[in-house]
Length: 225
Image (cartoon, rainbow, N blue to C red; front, top):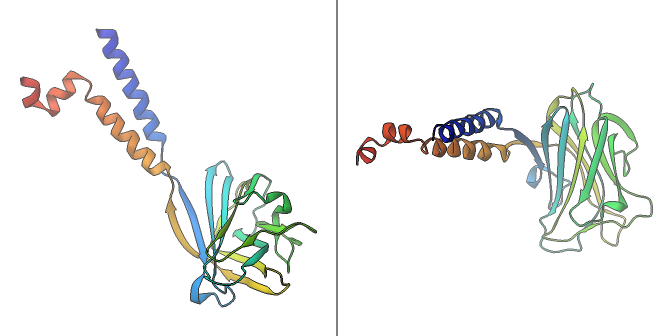
């Protein structure tokens, strides 16, 4: 019986230690859209940066076509200046697109958009552009396209507002459907670790109720029956 009690206390202690280190992390999200964006033409752009610790990050970038009519746009290129000068991206991976068309695009860390391609060296930016001869992803009215990637940028610090550069040709045309050069609007977002922390604390509390002594303290009337 004593060994069972010791095991229960040991398990509760382990759980509480895990909870103590499960501190909330926060993603930063910024958007460019609406009447404040003269060149968006009904398109919205949202970027979300999630720090994973140790200078590693996950990035999500979504282009949404909020128009109800029209042929839509072929996503051509975009770049995002996220960090302050002085940082340098060291590596990247897991580049994906929501429509599975990532083979036709190139993810370039340390580059910025320069009129349709990722030719401008900028070590604190990321850039994505359609490969030469590649098939573009069309963003039809009411649809969206999301790009995701992981990268490292040791010692980097975020800018308060990110620089969005993005261009897309109208489907079947060489003309721009959108050509964005604008700072984003920040919106802090809590990440899933916050509810995990709350759940962990709840489990720890319920686990403590498994001990008769704790139950007698918390529920004296029920324990006396």
